[in-house]
Image (cartoon, rainbow, N blue to C red; front, side, top):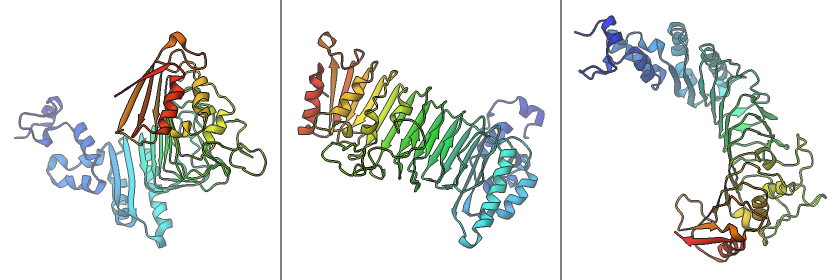
Length: 399
């Protein structure tokens, strides 16, 4: 005989029988939240106990082949579902009807408004919707959608902490949030002829990778702890007169890419000024992209930087000036990792250097204790870097 409601409340998480039905309601609601909504609803036929559980799940996964397949079902769900708060909502469809696209968006907007009304905390979207207004939303994940102007102004989402934008078309002037702590922009594209401004003064972590278009402009992030910036070969900032690690830095019309003509911010730096207060940095760039080298000419101080990872971009110039410059301007740097001509994570060669401070020049941090050089083969390019570091009293051993 199944336990009564009173006995169930006081029972342990799983009884000796080990049946899933013996789990408390709260746990079953959580389990059902991982299922597509139509599958979660079908559990009502399992037993009397399950008849109404789906109505109070802590999450909704509104997923399917196309929007029209779920319209009637979702209309019933919105009426029958309990008014309990939601932890998570995901909306994703594999295909849209081109002739019915406006209706698709209208329905998704409706479902999203209900999710926000039910105080959803984590929202994942794979389809375009209208602006989001929520006093409760904490995490927003956007995947493979075109973001219209003004969409990424989150002034009306005061609790938003985590924002992930992946494989999206960004057609906005500004990404703005005062509450945001963690921001990830990966594989996104912009066709704008000016820089998208990122204004998030409370940011603690930043990931900016494989941005297709003109590199976004970062405002000052005073609380930043860690940042990873990777400028891929699809970055449109290219020195037109690049030659073997040397950027022209032209201020005339021969190369407009090296010096910005009309950025929408008064900052002299595009990237490094905004992230200069971070404690941990990973700075990667394809050869021929002038952004980092251009920023270094304005000599931002990395006053809190403790760990730094760089790739071969920083060692391409004949005199290794970019590498020397960032080391000189990192007074408390403790660990430097150079990942040269090797994508990793496995590298054929790894060399670890230790700093001998007794003869240490003042040009680098006296706190620098570890330098790692990772590569596939020790060739002339690597030897040039090793000679440079050896001149700074670094002694290396092979791993």
